[in-house]
Image 1 (cartoon, rainbow, N blue to C red):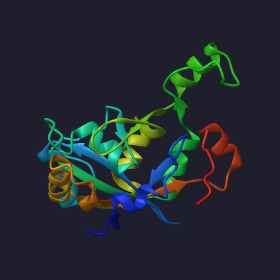
Image 2 (tube, rainbow, N blue to C red; image 1 turned 45 degrees about the vertical axis):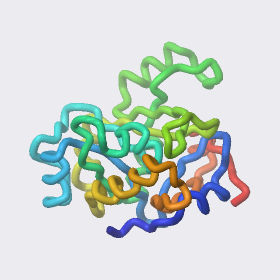
Image 3 (cartoon, helix red, strand yellow; image 1 turned 180 degrees about the vertical axis):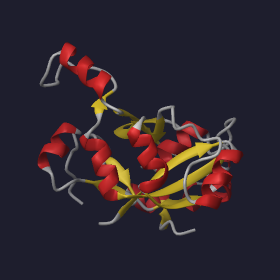
Amino acid sequence: MKLKLKKYTEQLQDWPQTGHHIMAQFDDEKIVVYQSYRKSIGKFAVKNQYFGGEFSLERMTWIKPNFLWMMYRNGWGTKGNQECVLAIYLKIDAFKRYLENAVYSSYDESMDFSREEWQEQINESSVRLQWDPDHNPFGNKLERRAIQIGLRNEFTRSFAKNDILLIEDISDFVKEQHQFILNNDLDKLIIPEEKALLFDDGNLNKKLKLNETNN
């Protein structure tokens, strides 16, 4: 497994507690995002290093760069048809392209355009963006917001094959770490090392409502 790991309690000291942040493992070339599937889809993806087989190119697929938010959504890999947890290493330029083309899933009065204009963007765009409450390892809501991105049409096709550098099955790792949650032993919990991502593009950061950190 190529994920860089670090104790949860050590990372917690450095993480922002509030605001909108893309918490992720990334470098100048790539970013890790997470998805959960039934075993047949996951095994195909790991074996072939792209999404195919039973994976639907016609449906919207959601990616999450925040490991703990993925664990909240899939119940640490215990929910039905989400047993196979994948770490997907994406080209960071592709990830940025998704966000540049993203439209918020719901309208907000603070937006710089009307509800009608937003609806037009929704109809035309193939990328959705939404911020949800982040969660701690036990699944409790935090004040910090976590991002998820929905892809469809040409973006799903690009994501499924061309944008991927590596796909890893991390299901066994997730199961091992889940035991520390069940035993209420966060001092032993190890998770992927993450930090807040900011882009060089100030306009994109503004669109995404990203907050700067002191780290």
